[in-house]
Length: 71
Image (cartoon, rainbow, N blue to C red; front, side, top):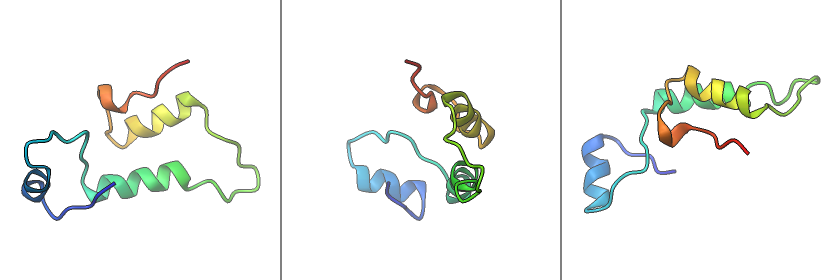
């Protein structure tokens, strides 16, 4: 993961390469809270693939890149 100040900076850093996926820091923060926010709860259990996919979807990370493989 790399953090950049703007999309222009991303493309300047990448040069001729294509980015895999990008997101604003606010989305990254929402993802981190949703993904890890319950980890210290005494009743914590690992999330299922379906729960993890729902987390990605809920913060707006949709599309082929964000699909969790089934299998």
